[in-house]
Image 1 (cartoon, rainbow, N blue to C red):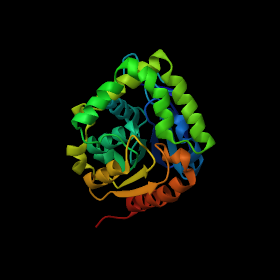
Image 2 (cartoon, helix red, strand yellow):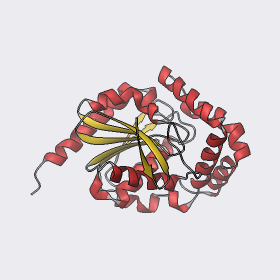
Image 3 (spheres, helix red, strand yellow):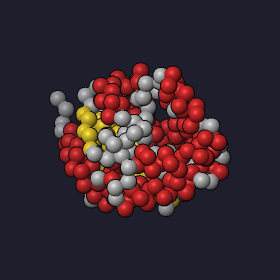
Length: 269
């Protein structure tokens, strides 16, 4: 494990493999180990960078984090590691950060894989009220442990490990503070990418676990409609598709990555 400093806090990360960089970005209260079931497969031909967001895993943050501040951290991560021609695989808030980087710095991003992503949920009165409620620390403390089990729909030993780690974090003071701050940020204009989605030019694959009660398949279809030229693939899992069905996930992702590589090496004109 190595660390680097971002404006949002210290980030712990690990790297393995060689080739085009693939950066793995996890969900709220989760950590880089969510991706353990697919890292080996990805690293056979690629440089894989898996990070713990500030305030998560082995990373630290002095201030409560928000969705936009995690996107700021991603900016700093790619600069600190001199990453170019990146493929980003982002889950939930990690997907939002990945998509924002593709919007703000398109020259850096070669491809996007968005997994039950945030950033594209219509900001209705109901969603705003729900995010405010979940952003209340007293509610977060009581609800998050049950909420994790509900959205994970655990079906593998890896899923059960994720549930255990996320629930353990949700029962700490820092975890409660982090989760509540993130939930409050989900209803802010800075988290909503829908009016900027047309600026995503990188090839984009959207993968959706259709058993996720927090982000329904309807949101997946709306995300696909918002991002020009994107493709949507549904798998029968909960929120963390690559842990619940790593074989199915890689069956969809590997051809996409091969297409990205081929496009990058094809002469223009």
